[in-house]
Length: 71
Image 1 (cartoon, one colour):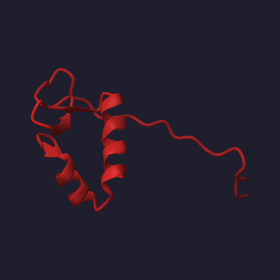
Image 2 (cartoon, helix red, strand yellow; image 1 turned 120 degrees about the horizontal axis):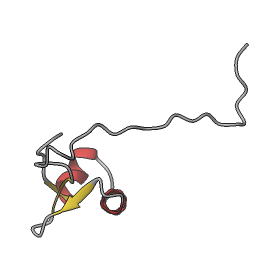
Image 3 (cartoon, helix red, strand yellow; image 1 turned 90 degrees about the vertical axis):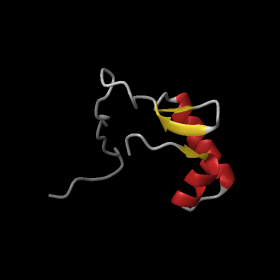
Image 4 (tube, helix red, strand yellow; image 1 turned 180 degrees about the horizontal axis):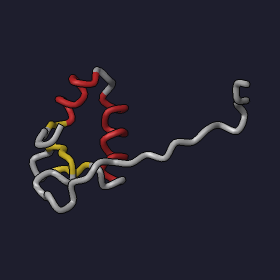
């Protein structure tokens, strides 16, 4: 949600996951440059507030080679 800024504990409660799992996911999102963390410990989207960088994320679809296609 654009403009949303949450602390670790708030994300954990919102998602209903363990603190260690939540921290690992947030760290991965920060490393991927999708989220940033403020000096006060709030997580937010990197693109918030910068309209030039705002865009929708694109995902490539892939299929598993081990699955057979239905005829």
